[in-house]
Image 1 (cartoon, rainbow, N blue to C red):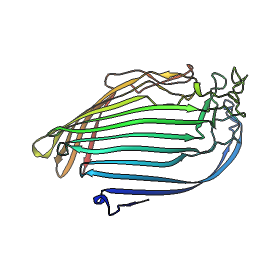
Image 2 (cartoon, helix red, strand yellow; image 1 turned 60 degrees about the horizontal axis):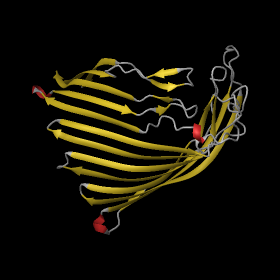
Image 3 (cartoon, rainbow, N blue to C red; image 1 turned 90 degrees about the vertical axis):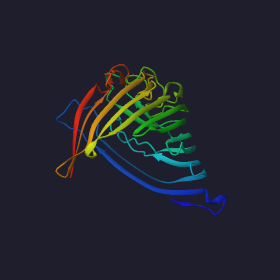
Image 4 (cartoon, one colour; image 1 turned 120 degrees about the horizontal axis):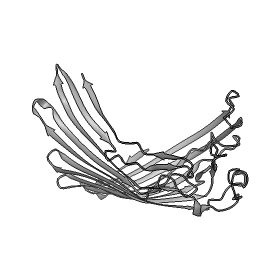
Length: 322
């Protein structure tokens, strides 16, 4: 990867080009523990190899010393492979390909006391890697990983950092996501969606885009934090930190259409930093996470199993530098 600054436009334009070549070779073997009859997976082996050439291209123009805008496009991939919990371990899935586009701006305001960065992005995915989960209770342990369909993810990001007054800062991060799946056709070799006994209906060859979702992709999410540093005599300080994060409801699985509720969490930390004792520096901090003790489901396994967020936690850290 390299960056070139042409001798035009007052040398405010940077052009970046990068190339990446990848060779990927994989071999896997699954065995069976004969001493544990509760394990239902059959032995098998598989192999997969492919090569790729990907690129990145960026135009970055500085309108002033405090304001710049950019355009970026790049290709990439998520590696192919095999599923550890698939019924037939000889099956493999190919890499998922992506092409992304992004336009954004970076800026400093109020004598560098306020930073605002924003970006709009769009990513197209081909050979989308879809995870098909088995239906409880008999086939809950099985998963199929297949290439099925295309996906498009559009979004907007905003980052704000504000030095409100001396020794105090406020930060805000916001993300908006819009996801869309199409041409998600169940492969002909699917067992988990191939009808009885694994599923009630044979969906092989059927487009299930309207009942498939991009998991863990909330439409709206944001995080805010406030930090304050109070200097003390002797070079130490009291550091106060308070944060809040929130996200919209989301799908915890790509299938079944089972959303989990939105979730907001509060955390904080108070630290006595840089305490000098006999040539050493100490920091003592008390912290807490999920201070309001929110209790929400964050993963729903087809209404047969649930995972909750971590409960309220608190503790004390002690750090020594010498």
